[in-house]
Image 1 (cartoon, helix red, strand yellow):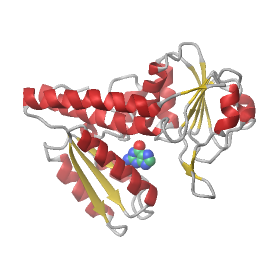
Image 2: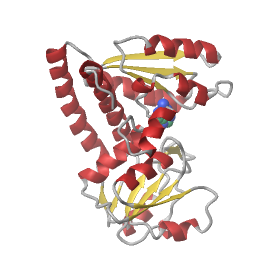
Image 3: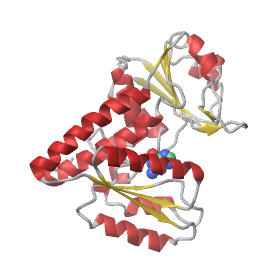
Image 4: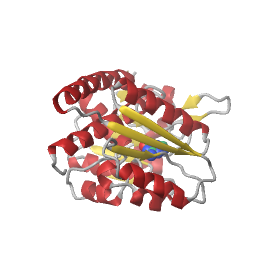
Length: 287
Ligand code: GUN
């Protein structure tokens, strides 16, 4: 039976350390890290994420603002609002919750965010930094997974990491972060042939395909580390991951649950990167 990775515990530990750093920042520099989250429409999953982000930011002592816009807002109006926050020195992080409604081009919106305030790490300047092995803002979910792997002392050097899912938010940046730690990385996706055979070669299997219980025991090598990024609703409304947890836990050595695994770390990294952006603003240094 696998050991279970407690993402909530690490998130709480890091967030309370962060609250301490925020106090010091306030007394030393009279500076409070500021985060604005922009939410368009009323997607129910997004509403929950945004509320959780807001609460965690306030608890850590941040200035936290949430801008809720109606589904019908135009691209131009949204860009105008982003520009207000780009120019406002009280805010060091700007996050536009995805997905956006169909009529808004998310690539254009991401480009409108000042890359120095792009705490999601989605702006091409930041993705470029990441792929060239330079410091910059990193997408929060893969950054949180790296923290979990570090906390649980998972060796990466020379190990085979298989990632299932090639999104800009998780799969692609995850590949680069693991390469930086000298893992051998295979990036797979929904069209990959013989996916279970490839997954079974993984020492570390990271699943972010967005399909409930997609990964069964056939995908897992005995002793593998399994990281489940999935957040899906089952038919009876239960929150489930991309991995069949019970089956996978029999073969894996270490596994994340859903909820309580990767999710809490995403918010933690968002706060951490906002704090770092605030620090850079007083230190006047770039990445
Ligand atoms: N939607 C789902 N995950 C994310 C994320 O990490 N950032 C943003 N902005 N939207 C998301």
